[in-house]
Image (cartoon, rainbow, N blue to C red; front, side):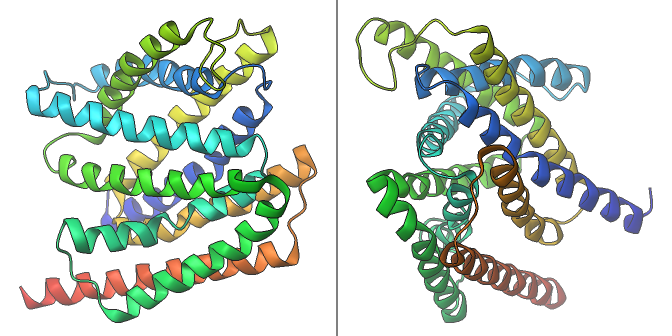
Length: 303
């Protein structure tokens, strides 16, 4: 495949993955509230590991993880489970588009953590863009906070956990196939989550004590797992076809799709203040991506 065709394929795959990803949240929001968030989260990773592992085995990208890799997979699993649990909890009270918009402060947190943890160079312009992006998030959070209280802050916790998760991913992706990494992390999440549900059974602890699901709840949880698997596969294969700097802006298609789903399924119409906040977040994020692309190009030309 010629490079230009490969890039186009990557763009189409990424756009498809970004537009499908909010479907995860639609199914999660439709799960009846008597099913605790921990159970929905566990169901997602049970489905994800069941679907991803055979694909990874068929593609012959699996290997026996060493002790260090096992620890890293368990750490990634913990981070993505907490991130998922916080986000699914927020979805029970917030519109999907609002929650996703707040979550998209993640690139700003990742930029700042990259400077602190990975010692990446971050100039004053990107720092200012991060601050402006956080201000945009406040425009989204404010009306949600008035309606739901502190729950509106949960997507910020999701963004923070996911940013650390992505830093680990950057380090591990250099030595491991992305599909194998996703498979092992999903398995680790199952290993961690199922015992928690077993221990919490009958405890009456909100969010943890599992409940026997109705047929509808089972269908919705299966939908969460299937949509998560499909979105991750599309995005993973997109990354193999095109540069990350080319694909990253397409992630913001999630907000568009989430808004459409929110209006069509839940009747959640964004307020003007929310739309302003979303515009600020997207503009700041695209600016940071443009600066990173320019920095990468300058680094390549100097070699």
